[in-house]
Image 1 (cartoon, rainbow, N blue to C red):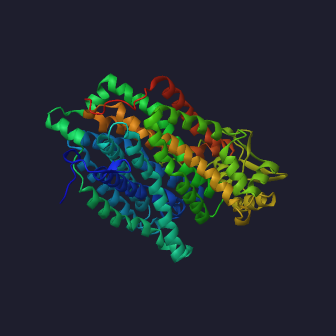
Image 2 (image 1 turned 30 degrees about the vertical axis):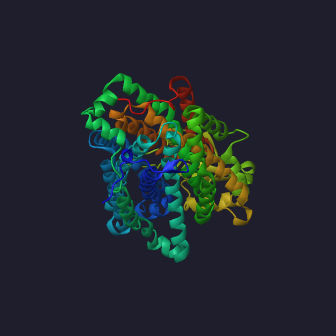
Image 3 (image 1 turned 135 degrees about the vertical axis):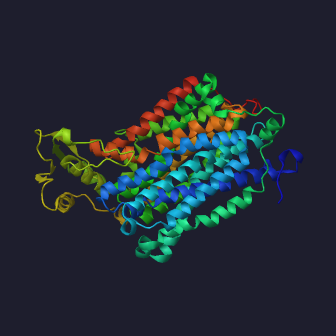
Length: 550
């Protein structure tokens, strides 16, 4: 089998890259696209999976559990970063991300053949979560390897541009997931897709796995790593060096709070939460929402390359700071330029009108009201207050809170109508009351301003490209070669796995607690503002550092 050794030959350059360099970027990016595809089909099919694997609870709780099962894969990503980061710094970049890719593909394929709750009961969601954990561990090792591998092949002054192709992979993976799901859904019809066709995107991962492994096997080890290893300068304990040494640990901490945490919340707000917001809050038809997101991704994705290239010219730091600042300003609840309020205006104007004209109040004993966040999946929200609030949130109804005497069952006041939670068929009575006051059960396709909705979603994607395009080069340049895989992987995956992965469930819980469909945006606002301050004050510019050090 042919391998490519970058240091051995220097063919002619086309478009700023040699043929070998293009193969390195293409193979690393393609494998990572497939891994993100595997990861994202779960999130994209979240509503269907809720019914298949969490059907033993009410629909609101089922969706929360599905989000948390999605987040479980993110929660273990830092552990994958530790395991595979250490392996990558000792054994090498190439073979480590071959292992991670295989684990990811197998985990996804097995989800496609997993029996549902109706067939296996509680064992089904338990196995689903176990497979999500396998996916999360694999992804925890993949990104650091791909980013490091590409950066260590890049010529001086072009690391931002080269690694920006890796940065497109998450969005392209989501884009691929959306297109595959839309194609299958349209071809077989909604009924068949919901019944069994949802399995096909998961099963397709077997083909993608075989292709990506075949391509990556053509690559040789990173020349920077290989030179260090040949000289006997590699680390025998990269985790100890990276995190047991304060000088290196401090860099990792600053990279987490000043870069990856803020990048994660901007990224997941702009891509995943935007999709959930369209389908769950604005009640836009799932197929329509997927098309709107896919179009915005197609328009905005070149921004990754643009801002990666620009970061080689003006630096990584100013571009990422701009992304953080724009997100804070336009996510801020109540802001006249809040972009999610604009999406509501263009995608579901009837809901916007109802929110303004028909206030709703939850009157409940505060001791019965929980913050409905459940990161380990064992809590149950069954009090009358929690039932009332979750019922309103799932119907996209804003409400205010009013304290009731201790021990009093919660009631919901809609206009002049009062509905106790203890009312027989509470959900149906509540649905009828809010419908009477103008709240639509779904977005009317004829009311959607498609060009303006796509524009708003594209702006969100551009924010993502600002913070994500330069970050791979920035993280790679912060750490020396001997601990680079471990050093960058852990803060990246804590930021994206924990701060980002828990964003949908956290936002949903904040909305349920406060009663305002936009209040959950405080979470990304606070995290992005923190990263702006930490990066501005403490993180250095790195675009001109020598990557072969250490």
